[in-house]
Length: 219
Ligand SMILES: C[S@@+](CC[C@H](N)C(=O)[O-])C[C@H]1O[C@@H](n2cnc3c(N)ncnc32)[C@H](O)[C@@H]1O
Image (tube, rainbow, N blue to C red; front, side, top):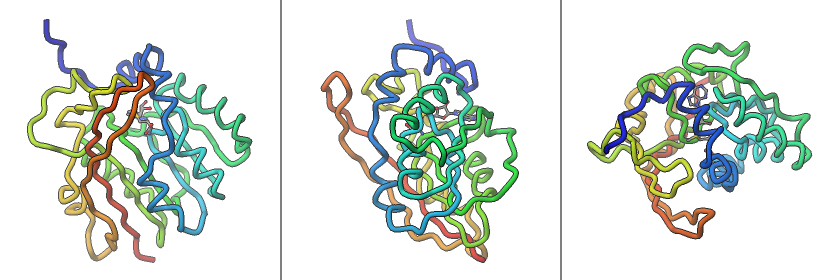
């Protein structure tokens, strides 16, 4: 019987981070787009929106950023906290358990980044929301699931299983994201769509289709 389409709400993410996919999700390497695009940026304050088990937040902290890392799942943050202690960067990361569709930060950030977070709200509205948290002169860096037409309800979505077929509602194109960044306020330096092969913990290869957008907010 086909799985029902799901809402990507707290229950969904709690189940993911409590379930058998969690170890595979937590074992990932820092996102290669982040390393390539942000590696040369002078560090400041950063927000990782939907940080999961903290791999990118820890990478940022290790590269000099003062990181706030937020996720809706307490289990994800528990894994992240352990990994940060192992990496000896705990003093540079503040972990926040929050629903980013309603949470409001108490500051703006020099870098706001997100990697594949897709909450229970329209994807592009989520990107609008996190864009509003960038400080003047700061950077928005989005890595998301690429929209590839109508590709289902997400019941086959990987999250560690290796298939990586996100639901259409959780994906976006580079053009759709950049169309919402007013050129009077933003300079877009990266807007690309790409694919890469990853090897899961079971040794199986799979292809991830990414959308990557980097934009600087005017002073
Ligand atoms: C596909 S995982 C990606 C995790 C991590 N960024 C990575 O790339 O490995 C998406 C993350 O977004 C988080 N998330 C989803 N909806 C959220 C929300 N409304 N508020 C905060 N975090 C959320 C999930 O708990 C999950 O950790």
